[in-house]
Length: 246
Image 1 (cartoon, rainbow, N blue to C red):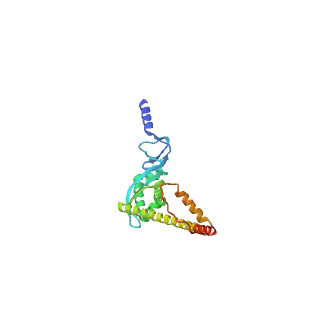
Image 2: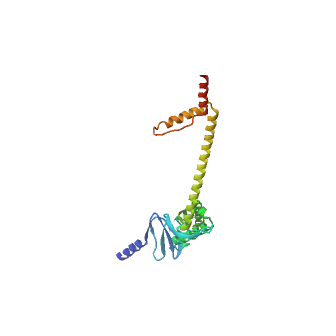
Image 3: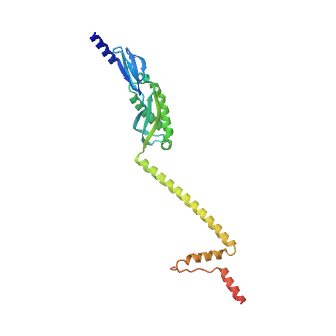
């Protein structure tokens, strides 16, 4: 009796399986898929049944740098990271042998394909759009494996050294162009203001005298300066008229 009881206890312990909260168990009965085990302690009949655990937490696939050729025939290297989680444990086990490896290969080929359909400027300036295109293609294929692709992020785009120098020269030329435009606009505004000032001095009586006196006052603040200036003709005429009246 004790032996029988011991055998029953042993079989019970062997049959008892634990599935954690972040896992799901895929049960097979005599080789055929039966059902999914939810978290907790579950009984699996030995010999007749077997099961495999599937982690349903979000995982990150680090896609290594891929040599790609853009639409405008520029060679570059780009890498990305893909975040996904298992939504159907049965499909993840039954439809694909190694889901992580499959996701990695799918991401690599998709990334090269999308890069070949975009120009270099599009890769550099529209990274979010490129990532969205990769996400749409990967998600379409991964859905058959019970996978939900959550996001795709482009990590880095590495250009050849010659292309980096060319882009640097182009950026420098663009900065010089903007600086020249800003400088010319400033000179234009200054010339317009000077023209307005000259017009005001020419048309306003006494304005030239006030400007001359103001300039003399500014110069006289430094006693080390020797200043030679021409007396306006209006002042000479005034002195001449004053002498004639005397």
